[in-house]
Length: 551
Image (cartoon, rainbow, N blue to C red; front, side, top):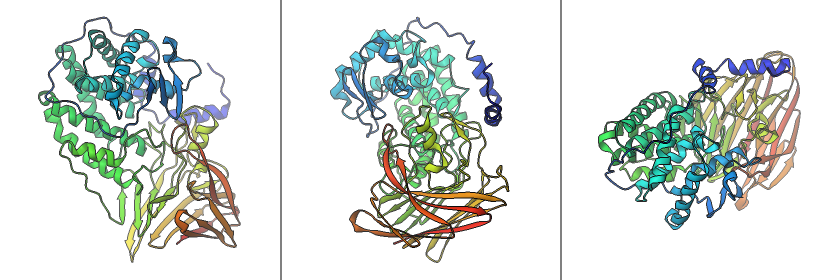
């Protein structure tokens, strides 16, 4: 047994206590599970009723027959060992095995490269060995190979046999230990394989996939349309999965026709949530794990849905409360604000969560003004830890602690829980407010409450901290890197934005105001310096501070 310091053992206990028994059992059982034979013949193919059409917007990742660009990093696949190259980022290697380029823009121009790469993968990745046979990358690759074939490309006998072997291994290694978006990806792959192939074995894959999809959609998609891991990026990924399934149901109506209407209703709710959680620039907001370039935008997904006669009306309401997921969108004049009063994620699956409760993002004139951290890396280390930390978000920190106890790459121990959420629209102003208990474990049991009010000329943020004892309270408002001029004033700062737009920031109730440095990670592999407006107060509670952004 590993030797853990007592503090780490306590943190581990605070993490494991939320896991479902089935997750723990599956983690143990996976070590002893035997895999099915993979050398059998591939089943026969079914006849599709139409030709596959891809969602637009996926950028090419294959730069040459052996060179690729993933998560902001370029690399070569020089030999068979390159599929599992030591020292390479795990996420980069996963992307290498996804074969997303088969469905990227201009894919037909790279058809010879794709054929050679698929043949190479088959030869250089023996069954059940290496990254490519792990359930998640296998699930994405299975769907991509099948979609490529359904688009009119021929899978040769070796590729079909390899594909069948991949599905057999996947069926024996479903990710019940992880659940969430991973299990949905597994289920989608089985549904695709069950439609693409025919016969008893394929029918079994299809039944398993559909049963899983029905159960997981019921649990993972909330009443307001949000995916329950509460990452706008993963939400958009899963929305595309749902739209892919709708297209598959049109191609194989005998197998999936009964599911189509239910999936359409699900996709409509998910499109509405993504619309609310996107900025006026059309891109997602940065709550929890989120970065540009991984998922399709709302407009791209709406265009994809339109191929199947689905409408995606936009909601221009001044106040949109997403009650089930815990977010609110406030809009007035040139200002748009997204406010986070959400849990960090499902209690048993918070791995993509950040310690960002009661944070907000702001756009002005269609451009971002305040932004959370974004995500540049999933690797264990200070970058990953820093981007998940409270200090990387537009919210409040007490005594240098995170509001939720994030650790490792995807672990969370103690969690903040929001409560007393209220949203109001009156007299030309929209507002949202909530409290959270993430610091109750500190002396004096501090409680943070934040109210955000938006009018056509201002965003007013009122932070109160109740409880007892002396504490150091720090609030941060990270600016988008495009805000390059920050002039200090007696009670705050004056900002100059592109187009000579001026914003005055006034702070009352704190003891110190500074402009600190920080980082913004709009894509994986990218970090940009940016200024962070910061106020600090050290002393006894209670504390009340008002921060005003005035046009």
